[in-house]
Structure formats: structure tokens, C-alpha cells
Length: 398
Ligand SMILES: NC(=O)c1ccc[n+]([C@@H]2O[C@H](COP(=O)([O-])OP(=O)(O)OC[C@H]3O[C@@H](n4cnc5c(N)ncnc54)[C@H](O)[C@@H]3O)[C@@H](O)[C@H]2O)c1
Ligand SMILES: [Fe+2]
Image (cartoon, rainbow, N blue to C red; front, side):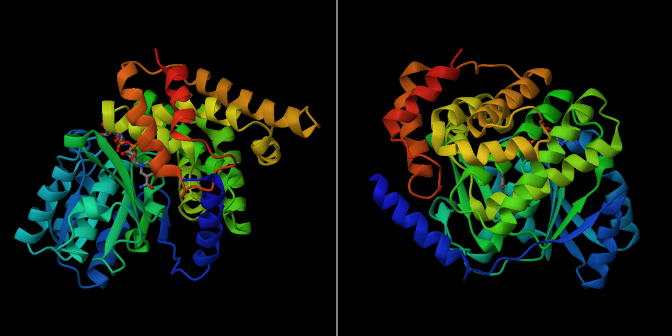
């Protein structure tokens, strides 16, 4: 699509967004806050629920305290625990069958972005039973209220508990794409840092960098409101302050809690202000090679930001201040120093500089899909064509 047409589309979308039904989840946070969930279900008269999670979290025993209280309170739960990282259409359909077979009345999404997104698409399928998932791709294809939805994140990264987005993979086509609709905003979000204490170091690092990427891409985009800009800045500050600590000492509950907040704020910000090319490029990598989402973002982020050049200079300089960095006064130098600080942070978290397994021959199609995802939807500082996007894959290819 021509650059000028993209900009017109983005202006119209920004204007239209003022008339859309934005809402936020009811936020319940703090130690053991997830244990308040059964009371809320009882209050609402919900007696049968589907819990969507993954096998690893079940093995770690993370759900046990919640499940015990559900049982005590007479709430029947059915567990779907086969969600894979980069959740698939098959995951959603299996979980949907369980929901229907057990006459569930609500969904609890318990896990990282993968479990939450899988659960969101189950809710979407229930709202639109005749619409296949492939037809939900893109913007506002659901437009119907879903069943009551409760999100419990166990990573501090995707912010899916605060977004109208679900990202789904179709392995048959090596595809991974976002579904974006207000119906997908969870009704409740529980930020309970104790659940993230055993998150392995590499996931603490990469999911934290995912949250940072959300905040940065939202802030430098052209569709910010005063509120999304504030939320993004707040998230950047919290991440610079707390991610090193959460990584160095996983049991540090306060740093973990602040990271959950950062991820939540970044989610609220980008769900309205959008992400950008880093995410579009990362989704293609996820679709082709199952690359963990946060890792793909962390590695691509500095390359894309540098390529924006002066188009992103002012907002990046502002984020330099938001990150609490000191020393530079000139705007161009601040922008450069902010990118350098993110690279330094990434290295200190043992995140590699390149991504293994990218095949030269896959690059044109991956870039084409990334361009299709981003143009015209994402209000990026500078518009790149599919051909121009190819170079980012070359830059990060090992
Ligand atoms: N909907 C959105 O707004 C949005 C935004 C960004 C990313 N995403 C999507 O989210 C997915 C990635 O989610 P993610 O990065 O949270 O990872 P994930 O859900 O794929 O989990 C990664 C791994 O970490 C493990 N894990 C999770 N929490 C744990 C804990 N507390 N302790 C120990 N192990 C734990 C999981 O079992 C899994 O093996 C991708 O598909 C991505 O595209 C969605
Ligand atoms: Fe992300």
C-alpha cells in the first residue's frame, strides 16, 4: 500500500478510536490476589468454568491453591492444559470442545500470553460460532460480547490481560496473526507476583523485553493519546528500574510485582496506540520457526529503532528521560543513548544478538507477511515496504 494511503488510513483509525467501546479490566492485585477469584465467581453465580493453561504450569503446581478453593466453593472446573507457546488453532478448537462438553459458563485464562490468547480465541469462537478463526484475523471481526473472562498472567510480558488482542498461529501455513477486537478485553485481571517467582531466568528476560517493546512501539507511534503516552512512559520507567532485579533474583517479589504492573500498563497503552514493525517482524518469525515472542522482539528492537532514524528521534529522547537515564541534553544524542541503553539491558539479561535458524529463502515471504500485518494498520514513525523489511531478518540472522 502506498505510504500516503497508509497515513490516511491511520488518521481515520485514530479518529474512529474515540468512538469505540474502550474499557479496562477490573484490576485485582497483590499477594494471593488470585485466590479472590472463586469469591467473584460465586458472587456472579458462575458454577462451571473452563481453565485454560499449559502443561508446564500444571506440573509446577502453580494452579493448585486456586483449584483447591474452587473445589471448596463448589465450582466445577475443567482444565485445558495443552496450550503450546505460540498457541495454535488446534489448541483453541480442543479447548472449545471441552468448554461445550462441560457446559462451562466462564473462562479463566491462567498462564503466559500463550494461554491467555488461546483462551481469548475460545471466547471469540463461542461468541461467533459460525466464524472460523482464520476469518477473525485483523480488526473488529467479533463485535459481540463474550462469556465472562478472567485473566491471570504468570509472565510479566505480553500484557494480554489488558489488551483487545489475541495472537494465534496456524502451523499448516507457517502463519501467526493478531485478532483485534474489543470483545477480547478480559473482564478481570489478577496481578499476583507470587505466580511469577519460578519463571525461568531466560523467560523473565525475554518476556520483560516484550513488555518494553510494547511500551516503546506504542510511544513512538502516531496514534497515542495523552493516556497511552503516560502509560507507556510509566512502563518504561518501571522496566528499567525492576527488570534487572527480577532477573538477578527471581524470588524478589516486589520487583516481580512492579514488572507485572509495567506489563499491564504497556498492554493498556499499545492496545490503543498499536505496536509497530518489531512486532510484525517477530510474528512472522514465530509463525515460521516458533521463535519465542519476547526473544524475537528483544533482538529486532534496536535494529528497527535505528532504521527509523530522525523519524523517531523526539519520542525516543523523551523515553530516555522516562527510563531515568541521565547525562545527555541534546535530543538526537538522547535518542541514541536510549537505544544503546536498551541494548545494554538486553545483553545484561543474557539475550543473544542474533536468532538461529532463519533460512535465507524464507525471508521474502516473512517480510511480505510482516508488511501486510503492519501496513496500513500500525502507525509507525516511518513506513517500510516488504522489500525494505527483509534487511532486518538479514541483520539478526545467525
Ligand atoms: N495478546 C496480546 O496482547 C499479546 C501481546 C504480546 C504477545 N502475545 C503473544 O503471547 C505469546 C507469548 O507469551 P509469553 O511470552 O507470556 O510466554 P508463554 O505463555 O508462551 O510461556 C512461555 C513458557 O514459560 C512458561 N511459564 C509461564 N509462566 C511461568 C511461570 N510463572 N513459572 C514457570 N514457567 C512459566 C510456560 O509454561 C511456557 O513454557 C506469544 O504467542 C505472543 O505472540 C500476545
Ligand atoms: Fe509482544
